Length: 84
Length: 217
Image (cartoon, each protein chain N blue to C red):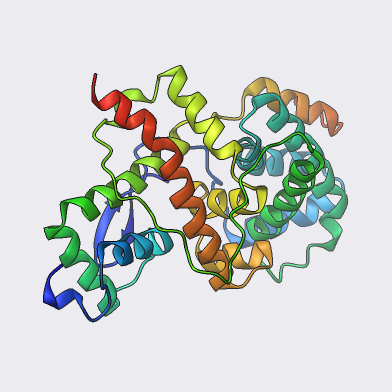
């Protein structure tokens, strides 16, 4: 942990807590700038951040599409003629 | 949701996989379709089905991780949406209103399943559990076709309590903002962040064994 991190993050545990809470946020806060600097130099935290990204990507990747058959069944249940 | 999501001052690729998403209509087009659907116009209702049924299905699937149940939940939810459509007054985004209905429906279904074994992550006022910082060496992109990986994903999220699952799915899979998730779930922003923190850490931790195991292959 570099000295520059001491203002906001006291340990790598603080960093992964922050990643878990703020991953995907769109912010340019001072704390985020320090986080970015830390990730550049800490392989453990960088790997953790990447693993959160991978996990979310996996859940997205395994979401199936709504099939034509399911659409047909839904329209039928709603009493909608597909040829309208 | 192709592209990237900004995290702090740098970008992280969040999704490399195509998804069915809401195809945004203009506000005027959407309002016109909704007004016609309220009057029972079948073409307008079909337009709503084509725009939003894939979203409802994807959300439902990620809550229950079962295709048949997700299709059934989509049907039930859509019938409910059409019944309540006259209540929609354009004061919120239609997608926010829709996610509120489907979230409540999925939570009701999940709570009715008494056999579900979920892990309690409650204690929002207390300190957060320590998160193990271990490496994932294996590239999940290679594994995504593996049946056992999908089973791991299903088992992990199935153990997550529904209230946490809804927040995780809305924020990370559907890509909504924390503020939108707050509005949909009727939780404060800090409560959403707390649940998101616990859900992400839990799921990441649950998936660690398979990545460490496969990294030795």
